[in-house]
Amino acid sequence: MRDDFYKDICRPARVKHILHAIKKAHELGIHVETRTNIIPGKNDDPNEHFKIACWIRDNLGEESPWHITRFFPAYKLSDIPATPESSLFEASAMAERAGLKNIYVYNDKGCDCAKENRPIESYLNVNDKDFHQIKKCPASCCGDEGVLLKKYENNLNQLTPKVGN
Image 1 (spheres, helix red, strand yellow):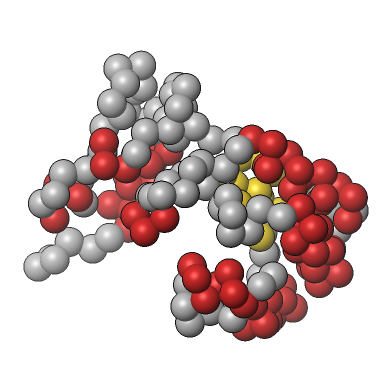
Image 2 (image 1 turned 45 degrees about the vertical axis):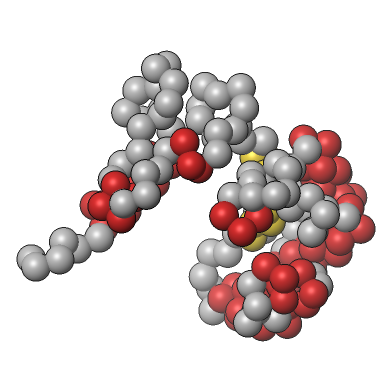
């Protein structure tokens, strides 16, 4: 709900443009679900979460789903710690206070069986070809469907046209 956040995270974005696009999609009859990735020190203020929840309620309706997700350090934000669980549940409490009915908290650990999130570097090699291959869970407990990243990449690989075909 703050332009300074977007300036820091996604330079060209402005809150009014994002909110306008979300509201316009809803007005056009498109099913809209909002998601907030809570990043420690960036957008983890419960008062801001209350404002987000009120905006969702007032513009999309109290039944509109709000997904509250956990941030994990990666890429240019690798110096920021993972979101504490307490921040996720504080945001959920703010959503309840605002009157939202469909609040989903994702207290993800990365791998379905992981006790901690592993950095993305543990899955990737430096060469570009390897980067686009399906990543394997470093633990032996997961089958082929066990890691959310694998599920996403399997779907992405099925949708991506092959070059030269």
